[in-house]
Image (cartoon, rainbow, N blue to C red; front, side):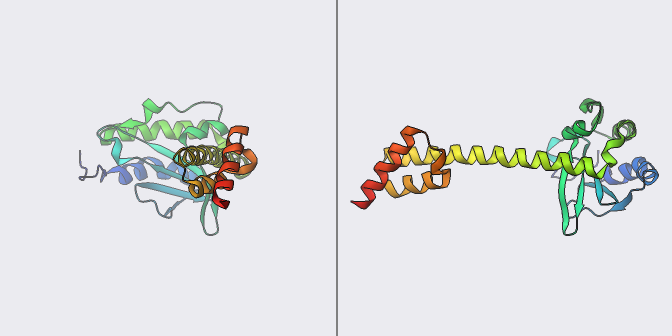
Length: 197
């Protein structure tokens, strides 16, 4: 296996191009330089992109990954990764079929991917991809917001317990005072009172 110290496989892109270029050309996708991505091959057509890549840290057993999404004027605006391709497909990707450790296994994984995408025409539907990617982005943002709120509440409670009133107040404000439970509302009130002296 030819790989560098960081697990980057020199033959990944050439094998993918050999195995996937004609499939994407048949689907009216052209080869494309995906902004900021260098560990794979990318294709673009009618405002959509497909990006086939791998994670070097998975060595010695890699997995072919695929992302499809919508290209914005300034770059990539939204994408669905392989686990979310099921949202626009009638079947799930078999991730075992996408693993590889040598060129022959990568060629077989690319053949599996071609078959999967061939049975799933919705990955080329711009409206559907945009809609699903938008819904997933909202879900990711909500999840991040919930985690950040929890983190801020934890910081506020610790600061309150240590009588660091300003820090407690700041963390409660960042968490969102309208979302506080009664006990945290009381702590916030006490922190404000102690800051006023």
